[in-house]
Image 1 (cartoon, helix red, strand yellow):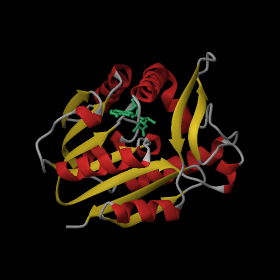
Image 2 (cartoon, rainbow, N blue to C red; image 1 turned 60 degrees about the horizontal axis):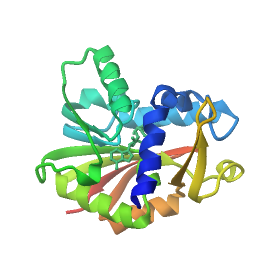
Image 3 (spheres, helix red, strand yellow; image 1 turned 90 degrees about the horizontal axis):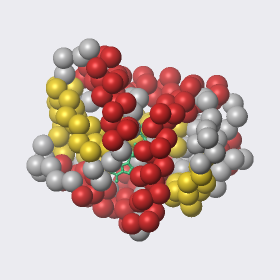
Length: 226
Ligand SMILES: C[S@@+](CC[C@H](N)C(=O)[O-])C[C@H]1O[C@@H](n2cnc3c(N)ncnc32)[C@H](O)[C@@H]1O
């Protein structure tokens, strides 16, 4: 991805932070049927409840929307995001939980950050891979795999490609996004079918263990093949 594309993506999420969670309640969605979003969120929340152990890394954590559902399973959580405003909201969410868990906040571009090899037991990556080109996806999985211990599990949540989605969006490409106040951003985004998900996981040596395919979102728990 070129610097200018990162810049627009990074700026978009920094500016969107205050209204980001609205999507999960069906407000300001790409599809005007809020129930579709809440149905998928409920199903994915339940998958989150069975995910995570030991030290978990959440890459592109945003406001930490999924965190309350997996936090109880972990001993330590490292939350990474390039956006300071997203991390701020995430830390407010963690504080509201009143959970005694150890949480580390890391602000920066994941691709440029350094962590100790094989230091994480589990991972979450939600709505980040869909912003990566195939080349970036390759770099992402290589980096994540280097950080994970043997037999680690990853929970990948992202945008599903479905009949409903296809009425509103292109499957892949530079797409326009607007904030409530009308500001417009051009970002790369792609959506995934179950075939895409299986192909990507297999290409990066992950074994799908459980999958939920919704109309707008999907979640897959996958284990690292040793
Ligand atoms: C679509 S949001 C998803 C937030 C959260 N994971 C969720 O599911 O609600 C994507 C997040 O990834 C962050 N992000 C995108 N590219 C990143 C990168 N290269 N390094 C770190 N964070 C990144 C953005 O700032 C944004 O907060």
